[in-house]
Length: 334
Image 1 (cartoon, one colour):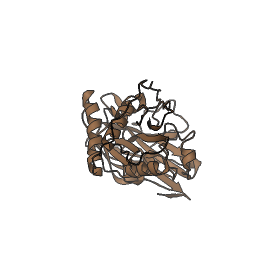
Image 2 (cartoon, one colour):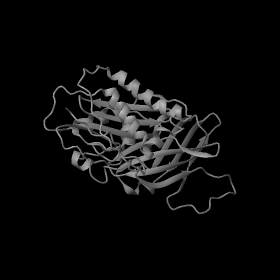
Image 3 (cartoon, helix red, strand yellow):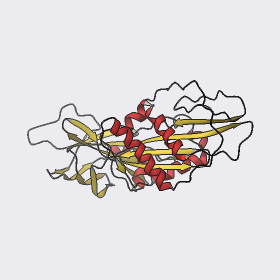
Image 4 (tube, one colour):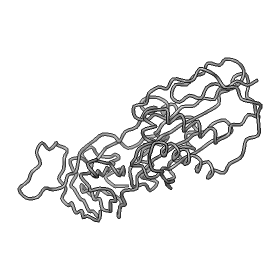
């Protein structure tokens, strides 16, 4: 008889000492996760059966259905499948190297990968990894149904407050899904995004001038924030499973805000030393915009990754609609 352990989200239980296998599951960290108490009754599977074979596209469709099931159950509109491939590469890398971090072996954070793969809007990533740990010898006939593993992943993420909040964010429009698996393990990456900004030219830094042009389809632009990360450095799987890489990710250091110029006779009060007044701030009711600013004092940090966050106001709410990363190395933009 083969005993299995309990499917667990954040707290991992490996309490079975008899021969057999333990199916272990854990989500990648999200902001402010809270431990979930595991069930106390192990499950005992029936005799091995031949598991169905699925195309990758079938699993992606099923994972999207699970997300929309939970969104609709909570009164939210369904989202559609995105086309950014950074998530699939990240899931494959995590499975192959057996780590669970949001960072990659190349040191990139999710929003950096998203930008390099063509993303323009904001992104917010969830991750989940499930594996089978053997005791008393591996059963070569053992197979896990990947759809069941996806169900386990979705249940685990919904049981974790930070991941659940991400899944149920009302502003999400799309999700990019990465799914990598073998007979006993599955890695799922969900990278949610909006669909509220379209850059006519990618944001760029030339000399000390930041230029951002395009169109927004949500609200009106209030300001632009810049965040800084040092240039990414390669990381080993062991590093990725240890602090600070085994926890939630952020946008780096907040290094300043670009504000619109005020009409003649009006002035900002209590400006921070890092705040910058734009030299060009052209916006119109159709959503088209051109914004330029001298960010020389923000660039004093030198080489690194400068992430552009465009903030809009809509119905009294402030929403970040982009996480676009500009790579500066030897004073040249990427």
